[in-house]
Image (cartoon, rainbow, N blue to C red):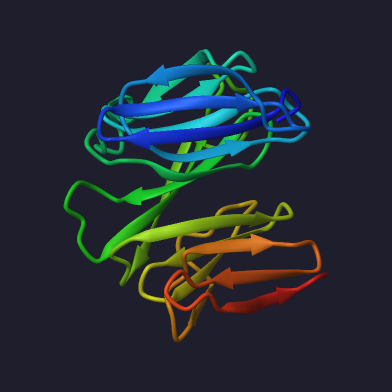
Length: 210
C-alpha cells in the first residue's frame, strides 16, 4: 500500500494486520480483528485495503491506519441467502467494485461461485450491487485475477482455470482449461498470466501479454 507493506497474520484466535516500513520491513503498527483472514487485496494507488474474514463471514474495508472503514457482512446479502458463506480471494475491480470467491451457498459441494459486489454505501453505477456466477465442478476456488476491464481468470483446487468475461458479466464461464496440477495462485507479471501449483511448484502460461 502507499503507507507500507501490509501483512495479515492469522491463527485460531483471529487475525492481526501488520503494517511494515516499505524500505526495511520494520513493524510500524498492528491491529487485531476477530476471525481468520481468508484474503487481502490492496491497490497501489489507494490507501484502502479489502480484507475478507471467516467468522462472522464478511468483507472489511481497511484504512491506511488499519482501522475498519466499512463492513459488508455476508448475512446482509439477503437476496442471495449466503449468510454462512465465507468470502475469499478478494480483488479490486474499480474504486467501488470488488470481486471474491466462495461457496454459492453453505454446503454447495461441487459448485462454487464468483461474486462481484459494490462496496460503496451508495452507488450510482449501472452495474447490479451484487452478482453471483456458479462455477461447476469446483469444490474450492483458490484464486482469481482480473485482467483489464473484460476478463477474470479463476483457479480451482482440482486444476481447472476458468475465464469469465465482464462488462457485462456473463452468466457462466466462457472458457475452461484443465491443468495437470492444482492451481494455488494466478500471477500476472505483465508479460504473461501464469498458474502456480503449490504441489509441484510448476508455472503454466495461461495467456501471453496483449
